[in-house]
Length: 98
Image 1 (cartoon, rainbow, N blue to C red):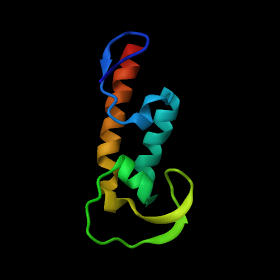
Image 2 (image 1 turned 135 degrees about the horizontal axis):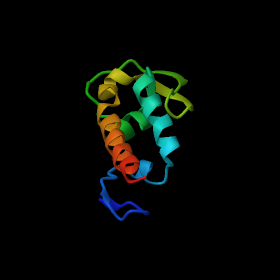
Image 3 (image 1 turned 135 degrees about the vertical axis):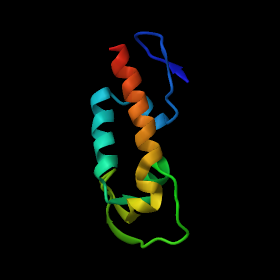
Image 4 (image 1 turned 90 degrees about the horizontal axis):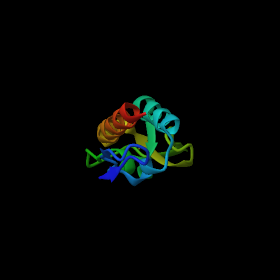
C-alpha cells in the first residue's frame, strides 16, 4: 500500500512495475495486456500466473515488452487477468483522485 503523492489517499500499488508509470503509460500497458497474443516468460510472470505445465515455446517478438526472445501464448499466463485487474484497480484509484 502506498499513498497517492497528491491526495495522500491510500492506493494499492502491488506491482512495483506500475509505481513509476504515468496514468497514460498505465493505460497503454493495460491495452497491451488486453490485446497481446504472444508473451515472453518475463512479462508472463510479471503480469500473469503460469497456468499450464507445458507450453509451446518459440523465438519471436513479445507483444508486451517488444523484445525478441522465447515466447509463448498469453493463455499460458491466464491471459494476464491478474495484472489487468490490478492495473484497472490502480487506474481507478488514481483517476478518482485527479
